[in-house]
Amino acid sequence: MAVYTHFGGMTGLLDAVAGEVFARFTQALTEGLATDDPVADFLRMGLAYYRFALAHPQRYQFMFGTSTPTSVAEHRSDLTVTGSSTDRADWAASFGALRTAVQRMMAAGRIREDDELAVAGRLWSLNHGAVMLELAGFFGQDGRGLTHILGPLIVDTLVGMGDDRDAAARSLETVVAALSQP
Image 1 (cartoon, rainbow, N blue to C red):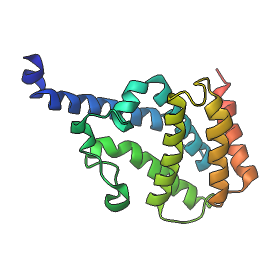
Image 2: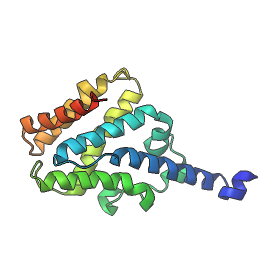
Image 3: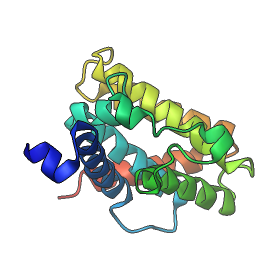
Image 4: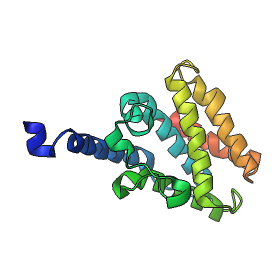
């Protein structure tokens, strides 16, 4: 009865859980100060995405996986048409943070001006695909997917989008160096 009293039923409960999971995910992505290196900030956000997914695989699958309940999945939207990944503004904040990161990289001249929505979707696809494969065990779940697959893939993609390879490598080194600090 408590589920019905507090949430109006299972759909309401799942909606509340999804709201909390998306809020925690967005917080993980946006923690930390923006620096004068938008590529390093983007890479830091990608690392936070990766870490969240591996630390909370059930939550990640709940949001983005094939096991997402219908009541949550029905809020997904075609971002190529609507400009958002969901019709729920509170759930869309994480994708909004990615769009902001893309805008910053473009404004700084690190990647070419392009459809920011499409670029954000492409970069999300790279990260999500690598994370799903690591969660499935194809990269051993020991971090090698990050260091041997995802990191180099993102750098290659940024270079393909117009960034200088040395500049992209320096941005990545900045993020790696920050990881080794206590």
